[in-house]
Image 1 (cartoon, rainbow, N blue to C red):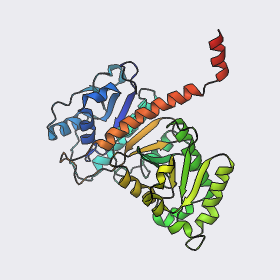
Image 2 (cartoon, rainbow, N blue to C red):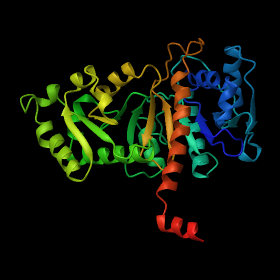
Image 3 (cartoon, rainbow, N blue to C red):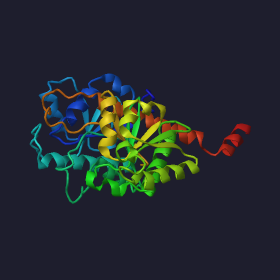
Image 4 (cartoon, rainbow, N blue to C red):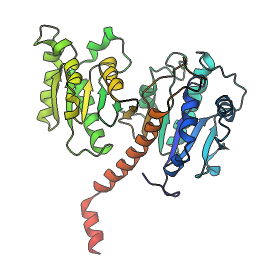
Length: 353
């Protein structure tokens, strides 16, 4: 990560639900002045929201500059982009309409700034998937919303930490409906996304990917369900035939219990809890959520709104801080990949001149 003022990426940060721990973990992260060496942060929220939590936390040393456009961007200080001016009652720990409304407002403004090129990466604080619903936000979370906003063909919810990376075939889908999404076509699409992300975003030239089974004991050869035989194994064989180093299907319980994930660069889980329960248990509080497949870089902490501790100054900022660093690392890795894969003939011509 660059630490020069001129080359620092501008990172957009959305406030999330204004009644959650979002503002608290943002403030705690940027109270450490060393963070400014790596990026120029722009918090998409309102001055009044940030001031409310700054006073609640008794953190008067947290300073920022308020901006309404990027002509006043300060690369030496935290910036707060004012997304609304109206008075909003903030009630930490309370799930209400205001929390979702202004979370969506901040996200909408941040995305437009990304599209306009003012921001190089996005880190999102948690939203609540129920109270953010509206005519403008009819999605089950950040991932499908971002897919639509950037017209991506497909995206992958990719949980990453130092010791593992777990992608999900299905995200926020009821368990009763998961099996209908476990198809050869869907598995191949997610495997391809994971492979491309591991190469371009994480710098792994020949990634090894493990695929988990859907059923207990990966179906026990059809005794406990046929999804492995009919869909998962054919997908793995097809992917291997096209040069992808993927293996499985593995029984999820033994795979994580025996730490087999350490032998692979990525793991494709079939559904949300199959992947996230072991990930959150083993990532030591520093895991993050990354949306692979977008033309921009977006990360978030691997936890939710935590209304039970909101406003109590108890929130741990480690995952959010790691989301910032991962966002910066991926931006840098993408630049390196682009440089390394430019037309080699042009490089040769320039060198010979």
